Image (tube, rainbow, N blue to C red; front, side, top):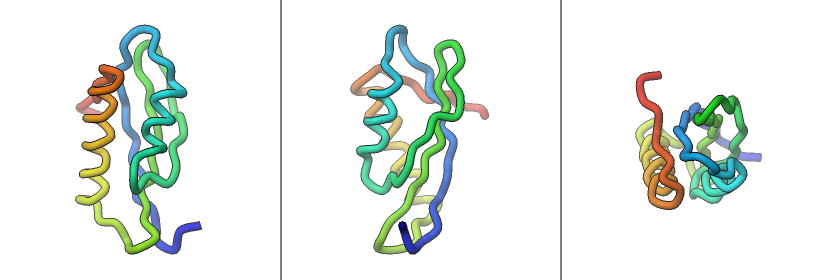
Length: 88
């Protein structure tokens, strides 16, 4: 249990064929300042996950959460060739 409120974001990713969703979720969960990840939607080649950002040390700002989100997207692209769906 965290003492600060989380920042919650939905992230929609475009997956290459044969991408294992569990590996994507695991990679996101292992990111610093991510407190929870849940699958919202899987449809065709896209995956939407709800990600909670939190810290034991302080209340995170939206700017800090955005930096972590950008890191997640970059790491997923590098490791799995996953891209971020924009325009939501």
